[in-house]
Amino acid sequence: MSVELIQPSVLQETIARVLGDKARSVTLALDEVTVEVSASNYLQAMQLLRDAPECKFEMLMDLCGVDYSAYKDVGTDGPRFAVVSHLLSISLNQRVRVRVFCQDDDFPVLDTLSQLWASANWLEREAFDLFGIVFEGHDDLRRILTDYGFIGHPFRKDFPLTGHVEMRYDAEQARVIYEPVTIEQREITPRIIREDHYGGLH
Image (cartoon, rainbow, N blue to C red; front, side):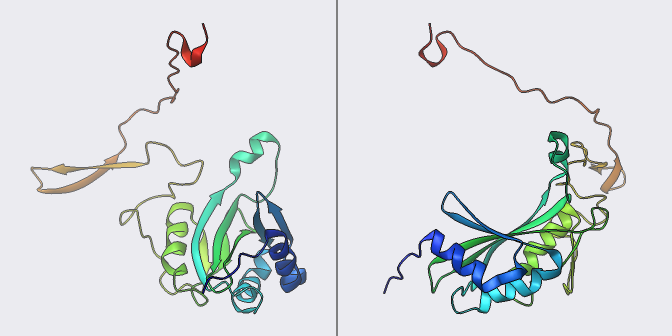
């Protein structure tokens, strides 16, 4: 039996009512509902979204870190790091996006969601590895994509494109060795190709 799709505006009102003052905002754009919560209300709000009968978001589909540091270049000032999650309700056929900003740019910390959704385990490890966001209460928070001893967090906007170290196999030592990067920094300028009569213009 198929479940009727709930109108986005109705979902927006429902979530706003369920979360109350635990939501900083519940907005609707392009037929998608986005909830923003503060770090202090993050865990409670996510539990309400999972358990409230009108929400029933049984599945955490995705969770990722975001580095907003480049926004300061265009005059937008605010916290640097955020976590964005996408939730799905199979039983009610609805989706929602949740964003939460970390309070401290130097040491970004949020509560873990791994007790609410098992899928948060690896997703939070990825956000920790790539952005350096710490998830308090996570029982196995370690790197998941980068190598042992990796320095830094490669998805941060200030991480150098060349990285800090390079590795190669040394035949004499019969093992992989790590060395400082020898690649010179270079400006990446896109090539612009314009053919004759490009786009039908003469």
